[in-house]
Image 1: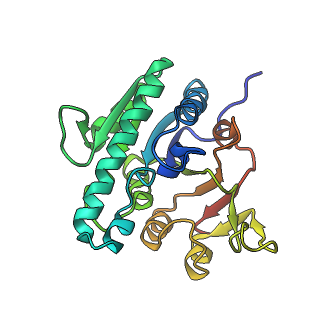
Image 2: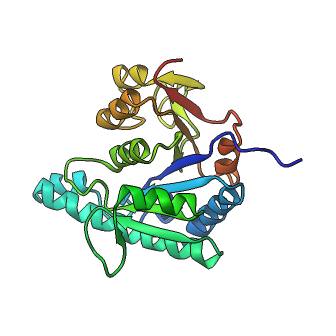
Amino acid sequence: MEQQPYYKRVILKLSGEALSGQLGYGIDSEVITSIANQVKDVVDLKVEVAVVVGGGNIWRGIAGSAKGIDRATADYMGMLATVMNSLALQDALETIGVPTRVQSSITMQQVAEPYIRRRAIRHLEKGRVVIFAAGTGNPYFSTDTTAALRAAEIEAEVILMAKNKVDGVYSADPFKDPNAVKYESLTYLDVISNNLGVMDSTASSLCMDNNIPLVVFSITEKGNIKRVVLGEKIGTTVRGSV
């Protein structure tokens, strides 16, 4: 008997770095193909999937502003990087037969639809994967905040935060501190008050206020997205209250 998914509508948050794989920059074709196949496995379960992709593998707004570029300009450059990643992911998904739409918060009608909440929900209901590009369309907001905002807007049941370096939330950097402890569950207040760096405080507050759970897990182990959607206890779950 086929397992039934625990969640029916999810937002998958991918960092730009996750797409770069071992390259450290740009887009690793093997990695993006692997992620696309994992998303297809979830879509085949009749789960509605939306994706928010970062742009750190191409450009990071904060890093750019640290080098003297105006912060708003640097952030807009980062938003354009997320569009490039979104188009690459769309191509990888459609190559394996998954219908996909890219919706951009910055109007660029030649390459993507504008973000329209009701249209996004309709796409999801029709079984299409919706990729939200260009962040919120505003500087000073991260793609973590985009994931939280879009999750609230489309009434997603959970945000799946896929990491390429760690397999959950730790008390300290596990690569620097051998005594770092991995948490199975946390509250958003824990994340904010202990500065655990899961997502920025704006995104954490938005999730907490709208009671949106977050699961932090490793994307490098194939099949993990499906495991989370089926309700397996992997990674770290963050909720409004434990």
